[in-house]
Image 1 (cartoon, one colour):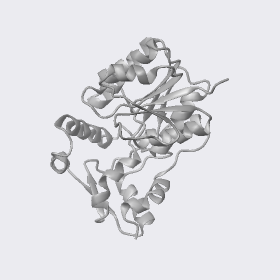
Image 2: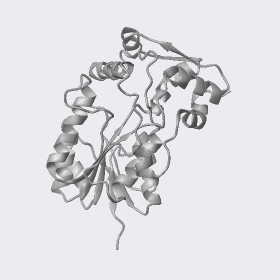
Image 3: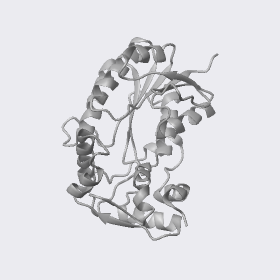
Image 4: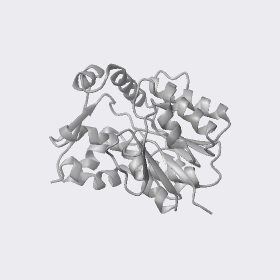
Length: 284
């Protein structure tokens, strides 16, 4: 019997690039989808396709047994993901694993959580074998602060609120099991780290790992927006501010066992992340 073929969208991103070796270790044939024709993904059949081009997506889905759906940040991401799910269903993919977000709900004040909830609802109505993964704040998002962390500090509008942030490597491992394992049909897994941490606690973990003093500074929404103005498009920046307001209200502190339920091992904590990424943060 031939091994199943799994299509990984966002194959060159943080989660997709770690998901491919996880699937390969399970004997799966991986088809890696990228928008860049110059990229070749090691260990996978590379296909060039863009969620905005349904013909290219249909070609990428041809003959696929399962698909992992993780779209790039786009203002119309929900519509693009819904169209992908429809095509996957029409073309005979037997399983779809959808990357959503912690606390996704249709009435959320956070636009990203509303968009993810919309896609979730659509996938449920399709009738395809599906699993939803809802990860919390990515610890790897701290890599975006590397320039200031190298100077000894980072800032965000979150105050002392704790967040059960997750290492993206645990998301990839969880996705691999959801894609090829049994017993996950129709399930929604909330993926978090093993505990909730404040940004001050993150700063201490980074300090220990790098051997340098790193501090966290509270920022206002306005200061945060000014620092990122011109770096992100307005809709994405506004959504990010909404995300951080959600964290600051203490709405993302609950710890779930989704990673252990799927992988059979505990989720990595912030000290694991800091140790493994110390070089990126200017280890002394």
